Structure formats: structure tokens, C-alpha cells
Length: 144
Image 1 (cartoon, rainbow, N blue to C red):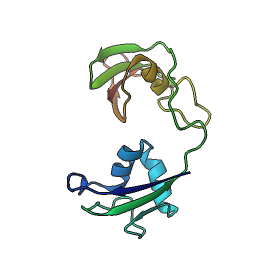
Image 2 (cartoon, rainbow, N blue to C red):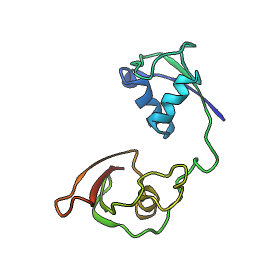
Image 3 (cartoon, rainbow, N blue to C red):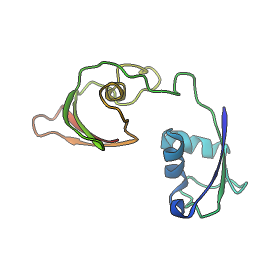
Image 4 (cartoon, rainbow, N blue to C red):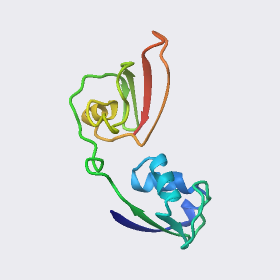
């Protein structure tokens, strides 16, 4: 378990607590939500909802427990079709059966493991839309 103390700056003010912490800690918003619900995240020593808009000067104290194996994404040489790649964006044609993120039961062989191998930077967020060639294949756009 790690403890983080974050003091919100002027430029960070106004953002939702869950989104802000997901960016700062690189863990998912659903995990942040659980931490907030469990009382492991306090703002100015108070419980607040995940949608709380942080303010300049807020002091966020977070006790974050990371499960073994979840600390680092393991790059794997999984073949993927990279449609486009630059310093900020990766567009891939994801096979329909490929899991996107490592999770319980799928710690290896995921799209993110492949992206970690093929790209120097990794995505913190992604969005998807159906590709024109098929209804089963999906094009994934990853901001890096």
C-alpha cells in the first residue's frame, strides 16, 4: 500500500476528483471509485464523492493498494495491425476476441500488452468505433 498526498494547483482546479486521481496515479477510475467509497481517499480530511470538483489548495490524501502484478504493464510481442502511429496517437485494428486491458484472468495477451511492446509511450485513455470493413473488427484509437 502506498500513501500519496497531493496539493491541488490552480491549473488542476475544477477537475473531477476521480479523473484527476486516475491521471495522477495511472489506475482506473473504477478502482479510484472503490478507494473513494472505502474511505481511502480524503479531501481536506473529509470523505467526498467521486464527482467532487477539486479546488486550488485542496489536500488529497490517498491510501492506494496495488495488487501484485498490477504495478507494471508487461510488454509482449503480440502481432497487431497498426494502422497509424505518431508521438501522440496509435490506431490499431483490434481482433474481436482480444481483451483490451489486463485484469483478473487476463494478465497477459491483451491489446495493452501488445501496445506496450510496439510503442514507446502508453495510452492512458482510449476510445473505439467500428471499422468500415467489418462489424466484428474494431479500430482502437489510443492517446499516448
